[in-house]
Length: 91
Image 1: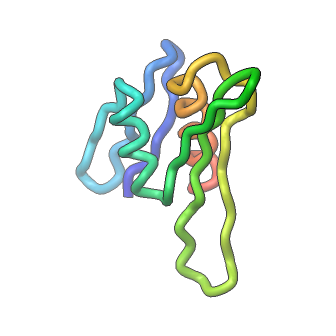
Image 2: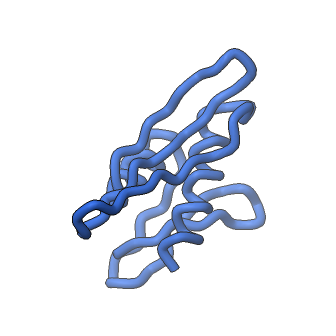
């Protein structure tokens, strides 16, 4: 499985766990990486962007979402924050 984290220079990369390393540089690549964990969605609200992932859980009756904050300045910033949070819940 590949977990996603944010680096200090604000770029996003994957953490190598199973021999696979996928760099996430664009919004498209980042959303494709988040797709490994569930169904990512990008939304624009009046005051900003939000990205959330409806996580895949293989236990009956269990489900949850991971999201960025609302009011993120760009879709990419929202996706990066959501990716950091996905990493935290999948440790």
